[in-house]
Length: 341
Ligand code: SAM
Ligand code: FES
Image (cartoon, rainbow, N blue to C red; front, side, top):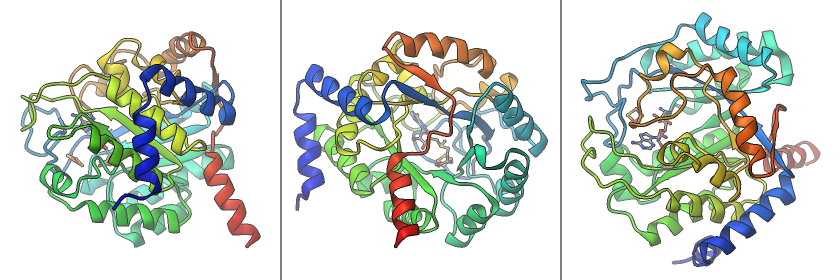
């Protein structure tokens, strides 16, 4: 049975591209003006115990060169990012038992102790127990990113070997624990079509996300989906734009994957409703090994040097880099409601 989110997603996606992008850009500027919020991304481990069929760092990909950063290395990346003016950081990694909740909580407390409340600290380490998320929140992490990947329960199970319901339960736990919650999905997964795209956008909206990452699926040769035909980035751009119309106050990145399938992909996303960029501030020598998909951009550059390039890119679509925390308005409104209730 369709609900209002399904109807609104289908309606947005039925617009011609130019009109959809124009409306999404206007909605984005209505909330965020010309600001493009920055998140310094540190990819901490690619030693994944899971085996998602689409992912280049899946356990069974024997071609992946595995690495783990130690806490001192992660801290150093954040220090450099902070020195360059960044106020928002994302530490992301594989589902790796060496990055359990205890260790991540200690790391969060250390980062919070050193940088105080002026920085936003986000994690993305997959599904955990509610008690683990609670410990992370207490330790000072304030955001969590966990894409639902696809809203099709059967496809989700087939690709990830785990039920969609578990991922959605985790998102609910994170919200109840007071995290600013991010999720999202890949477009163009094999076996999906336009109706699935509308369902993915609708689910993201129904979840009332504070942040949503959307990127095209890019086949990796070391995975079971390596032979799938790559699709155009147009679908991802339309999904970003449609979601902007449904969730005007959410932070929507111009994802690295969008920028990896076309040289101007991120600019096009920023002109179609996206308002966030995530420069990779991890050690240059390790970036190449976090190979979720081939052709990932900015692997040889120091993340701090990327800031100059990003400044020019956002200027080309009439926007400006913003070095603040960039809390999502939807999260701020929720937090205010809770304190005044
Ligand atoms: N382990 C954490 C998790 O599961 O949420 C975070 C890391 S996960 C590798 C980061 C994201 O990369 C996934 O959520 C997925 O959407 C994206 N990704 C993985 N393989 C991809 C591919 N072949 N093409 C495009 N995006 C991909
Ligand atoms: Fe690591 Fe999917 S392969 S979470």
